[in-house]
Amino acid sequence: MTDFFGTLSPLRYDPESDQMAFRHYNPDEVLLGKRMEDHLRFAAAYWHSFAWPGGDPFGGQTFERPWFGDTMEDARLKADVAFEMFQILNVPYFCFHDADIRPEGATFAESARRFSEITDIFAQKMEQTGTRLLWGTANLFSHRRFMAGAASNPDPEVFAWSAATVKNCLDATHALGGENYVLWGGREGYETLLNTDLAAETEHMGRFLSVVVDYKHKIGFKGAILVEPKPQEPTKHQYDYDVGTVYGFLKRFGLEDEVKMNIEQGHAILAGHSFEHEIAMAQALGIFGSIDMNRNDYQSGWDTDQFPNNVPEVALAYYEILKGGGFTSGGTNFDAKLRRQSLDPEDLIAAHAGAMDVCARGLKAAAAMLEDGTLEQMRRNRYAGWESPDAQAMLGMDLETIAAKVADGKIDPMPRSGRQEILENVVNRFV
Ligand code: XLS
Ligand code: NI
Ligand code: NI
Image (cartoon, rainbow, N blue to C red; front, side, top):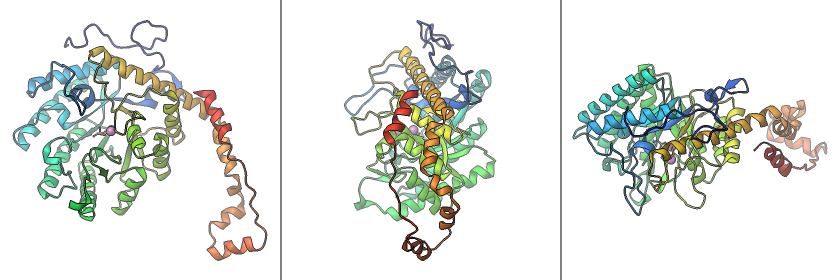
């Protein structure tokens, strides 16, 4: 045991407690026939909680953590504290990038050795504590070698380095029993078209994703490969703009049955969508995978990665998730960081515990809306006309035949209310 979290002990569900506790997240409570823990499948992210120093564009490190440094001893201490946090929070899962967990070595081989030393430690800790890996991923964006992208880099050596890195991270994810593998296209995009061959870059990205998928099958990794869309930041334009764009990309390379989406609330907002839009779109296209449950500040135009704190918003997201049948291999990852003034270890626990409670309230509201059924009934009624044999037959007709039906005078549409306010009032009964 380290002394980082002092006397903080594992949090319990206790709505009446005056200590730090869960007031809404009750893992064993059953909703729609499933335990809350199994619905939400919470994961804590290694990077923001343990590797981020608290910097912003105007200032550097604010946090002081005993493991900040670049030795393997620091990395081992970080792992100890991380697993202590997972225990205090009782999160079933965690997620990590290679760069979060080990210091960069002088060579590729040295980095790889350091990486596997820490993932071996993870394996022991996972065994001891029962914490599981929701997903692993590679950091192909922080080191300067990736400044012009990874798979889309104009330099083929960076493409190769990236491939080798993903291979290591996928191997480690597989060895640790990870349930998914994520590719967020860190700097897969461009700053200016003046120096960019857009056709070549996207072609290379498609090839890269294809070989990752092939390798997954080769090693027998049963988890899902997930792409995480984002429209901009760090590059001015990211190729994996949003769910719809990525779907087109997957189609282009024949990967639409192989790859699913990891959808982040903040990225959806940056793309000019709502979170629930992106979830519903992925469900509609059959590529929904997992979520990063961290929100943006609506007044700033960047990815602020805040812990969720808006129950009505979260309820609408889980409503779409439950409506589509819930998570399979995916879960709720907090890709979220503290505010840079939140210096204390206790802040780290409070942030996650509060976020888990917000998600629990949102999930309960979503389950209640679904059980109540009014919203779905009203949605179905709106499309009821399509249930008639005539309407269905029309979907098999050519343009001239359809036009003839109207020319006959048999068709004369009557506008009907979309009933949006009534629907919003229904939602308001539950949130
Ligand atoms: C950055 C992304 C990143 C991915 C994992 O905006 O959200 O944190 O989730 O590489
Ligand atoms: Ni993000
Ligand atoms: Ni993310």
